[in-house]
Amino acid sequence: MPPKKKAKAYQMAIDVPEGTAVGNGDFVVGKQFAKGGFGKIYQGISKKSKNKVVIKIEPHENGPLFNEIAVFVRCLKASMLNSWKKETGVKFLGLPEYLGSGLFQYNGEQMRFLAMPMYSCSLENIRAKEPEMNVADVVQVTYSMLVALQYLHSQDIVHADLKADNILMTDAKRFDRTVLVDFGLAKRIPNPKEKADPKKAHNGTAIFTSIDAHRGCAPSFRGDIEILSYNVIYWITGSLPWQRYETELEKVADAKRKLLKGKMKSLKKEFGMTGEMSQFVVDLLQTVEDCEYEQRLTFKSLFKLLKVNISV
Image (cartoon, rainbow, N blue to C red):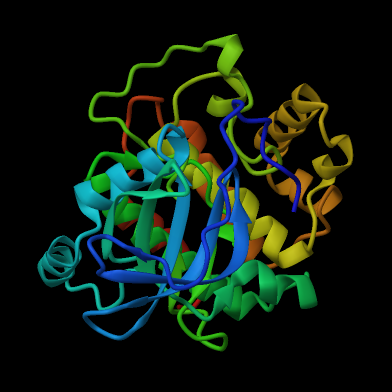
């Protein structure tokens, strides 16, 4: 997976040994299994529930985990998720539940942690074995992600970095039970204002990020749907033509503008993508293009697009 735009020079997290208790002893750190940005990610155990958890750790002065914790505390508590599910009739909401967070000292260093549920694997783990995903599986993931974004947007949160690396599986065989994670770039935007800042241009994961992000605007609600559209193409075809530009970010942005202008012709010519899913992507991108920066998309219409084009 191509890297994100180079981040600020945050401090790298030190290693925390297995058996370290955090959160007033509520969680015990286990084996490290991944790195995320400047933080480290560990298996862990909740002493209360005895369930396996994921514990993300970063130096306390770093911004990404602080930002992520703010999102979890604001809208990912179990009571909030369950209330929304009951209100909307949604059976599965693909977002992680907030389990705990806080500060702790280790080896003279002040560290910040976040505890969340542990999942089976990432969608990228599965996609890496078979880059061109089955259309039926893509439909299920897309539906699950639309529901997750619907909830986040209802809470004024824009995710801004949807991709297979940030989609986890509750079960490796259940594509209808996928969970959107990683809120390091997420932003609360109750009153969006369109303002391009060249110094902030191209923020996010280059091949997926939105035109608004390429312009240097703050994350937008329409941008989340645009990002989802590029992912759908990527999951079905196994690649995106602008990957070849790598760090030439303006060329990446121009290629996306070309796609938005040509849509169906571009999907056939550049991506070799045809069939009912291609029409869904075209309709999705048209919806994004018709939406003003400050506007919120109507998810009822987005679900309808999926239902009209594909049998869900």
